Length: 91
Image (cartoon, rainbow, N blue to C red; front, top):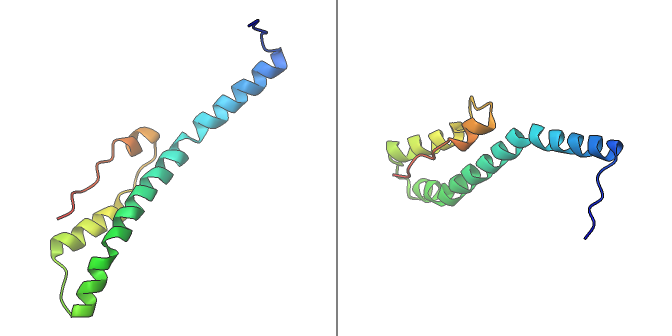
């Protein structure tokens, strides 16, 4: 159980690893948001397909909800903004 401190080189390497990880925080957050958004869109694709097959129209609320999902990542520039996103409620 003896602790051996990092050498200066090891400390610098670890600091760089942490900086690299933190620099990628937005990319990881936006990728997660897109994955969740894409699942919601994919899960509702059948409703679009069924409406087309039946020759019926989708409600404007449903169309708006899907468009809001597609637009959900627009303008986001920070991890904090991504984490504050609330998904629109499906009609």
